[in-house]
Image (tube, rainbow over all chains, first blue to last red; front, side, top):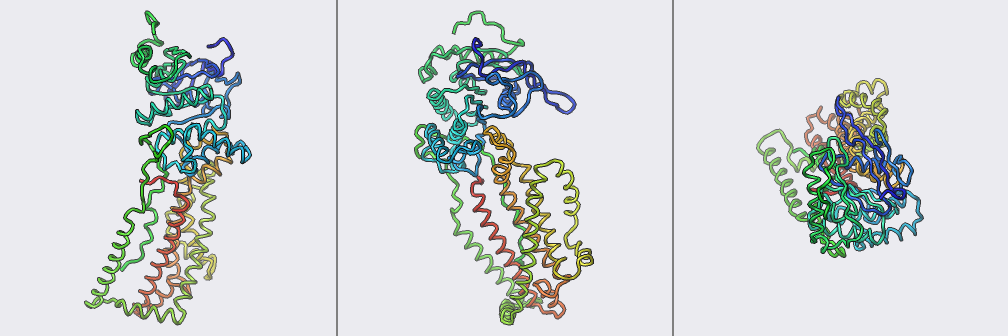
Length: 268
Length: 289
């Protein structure tokens, strides 16, 4: 994955927070590379610094040490090439779906007609045409998150950073949205860093799963899922999926070393 | 009978509540899957009926007490006095005088409070500089300022308008400031990652997000402006509802006092309703429990 220049490159990033008199190490010398158009999921126990990692990549927080590069350029502040999707949707409640989707286009001073058109396109892509003029309060959780996805897509970022976007949804809706996200992604490929605490979700979506450990936050294990499998129900129910899932599960719930011990046989 | 209930202003929850949305989503084409919307109009008729019954009951009790020998004017006496005062123009002039004072004071107070509240919420330095003064003046009832205001500003309209201004300002500035500091950080982050800079975030996120707080502040401010006005007129005025009641007291003129009280209550209620209406219009996007 590192043969060509990485799309996202995290190099020795450490992030500490002052916690009263102590310091809390959210991320400890973390390094990872993500290739262009790769779908990477990050899974790990709470407190492992997943969200901190995302905030650093989004430019909302600065690393204490090390650096994060996007397209070879160090991240300094948020940028339109990196779209972010938050767990709590973060839709502007006083704006309609369409106005929310147009928000980033307006700040980028996209002319009105083009703004309309692009918003229309992405609202259609997530299947919210009928609700374009509805306020967020009238939408269900899943629809709100689809609106947030459309909003992030609309500014045409090459990277999508997703922080447990489906975490607040019920299991049925989550599966639906996972499939829709992959559908959207396969029609319109982006580099995705998807943070989750759900092992199934991590395996189902990813080309590669990164398992993190807490205290201090670090990469514990990396599991290749591959690029070839069609992500559908068959895959979800396959033995291959089950094997990967077991592997990731073990990594997440039985962390004993500083990093994962190499498995005796990496059959998947 | 007390119609002076204007302090109910803060009772509605101004917080743009966050959803921990877990409502089901039937996905796919987005067919008829709107989350159930709270119908707020449901059963609106019943409370109105209850309100009317309650008012009628209150008047009946008042009447009964007056007939039972308490030192109270009966409702017909009060209505007759009101008619006289309306016919000779006194009531109209008093209402106009009082309303003018309250509206000028309230408008100035709000106009200053909103920008000051925003500045306090947005810039830490300014907050540090301004807050002690606001906290200090908040503990002083505006009425206690009147002696000072009269000495410094003379006995014309200025001191009255000033204390009303102060009352409205203090109520509104605090809640505007509250509104700004409690804007959901995620919304600000969301705006930033969508490319918004400080000025855009301020205009397009902070201002709309704090509107509910500002409106509640205005309602509380109006309530306290109105309360202060009447008291200010009791102390020093030649016209106005407060003055009229003060004057009537000298002559044991209970019906006139009642007319004054009821006028104050009704006007306060009307102004509050107008603001409430504005609030509904401007903050209809809020989710309510």
